[in-house]
Length: 373
Image 1: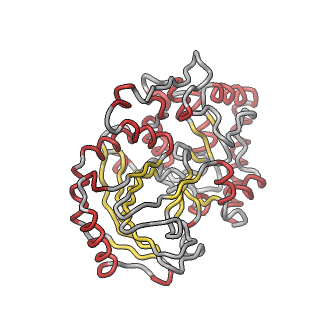
Image 2: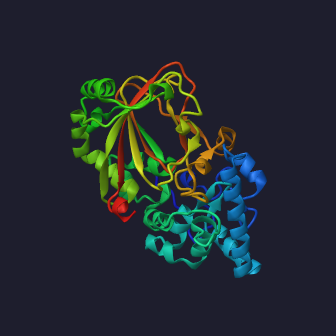
Image 3: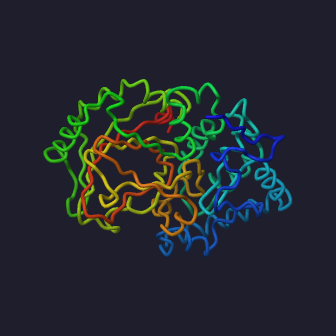
């Protein structure tokens, strides 16, 4: 695989398909994002007519106008023109600073946190600490500071990284926000034993309301243990999350027949409102497109959402909008197949189908993130 050169301050074209300067749907013709209008709200958010979202977007629009007035229109326009020039993209959902960070702060990614242009954009449109009338948790700032420096475009991988046995898989993960694994047997897992343990845990040690279409278990699964000693998996997670990784446990989950949108809010397109967090889903049986697979909007994982930590209903996005902006992949496969997903990417559990679906989810964070939050 020939390494492509990323866009740099002296080269205003990105030569790799993995780090497009202007992905489909990105608004680069206007210097300042306007994500809070009624038209955007109705086009983007599933619960757009809900009073919570109406109030939230109106309050955020008032805050943005106030901040622009304080800073001055000319300064704000100049700032955003510079940001777009250097690789920032944005759409109705949020900013993507991944390429800009590589362009401006290639040698020291953490410097993006002190970049004055970036600080203005994030303070005005994402963290919004001074917005009146909306509750924005304090950890919004922490999420930004903890997550952003570790983001990098796939085309920033070095030749040495690409040459490793897992280099192509890491490049795909960085480019799309998800990567599929044919079988966790490659990580030392006895697939038959894991399937038997997971199904037993659901049947005998599960909890939930079956009328709501979901059933879960947190019972130990000894067959998972070899995976947690796999250097191949550890290297992939370190490469994606930017350093040492913390395993935060697992749960077994079954999506039952009779599931409906009013009971299963994760059936709507959403991000998990916790920034970069890797969730690995291991299929306990064959899952086909008719088996209610997880769907992922490829390339949405590096979005710094305007509504990063807002009310849960603000994180639910319309299917038509998602498909107008992103390619969508279904996480199907044989028993033992897995998908490794950054849950900051837009995703959903497909509700339409004729078969129940059982999955083991294992969760991983960058070491130090969870205690900091």
